[in-house]
Length: 106
Image (cartoon, rainbow, N blue to C red; front, side, top):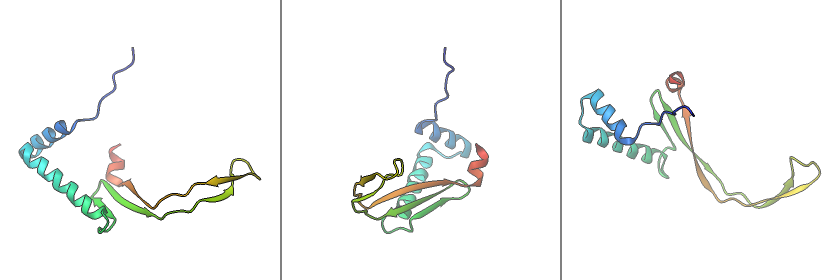
């Protein structure tokens, strides 16, 4: 019989836990998380700085990758053979880096 795995907490469980810890109502905690989400969206959006830091936890960064053209390049796995590389559109890649406090929690 496989060992039971612990499930991550649901949004409702997180709200309840934070509200009991802080003494705020669930509605207040929910509005704080919504405001935090809006701040992150502003920072990583098109007109934002491209970076947002949750102090002590993580740093959220957006890497704006330019479009690439289709090309024929050497195959790194079969020397001497050429391979076609497809064109890729411009895109934004979100990277989340853990900071020291978050690394120490694990």
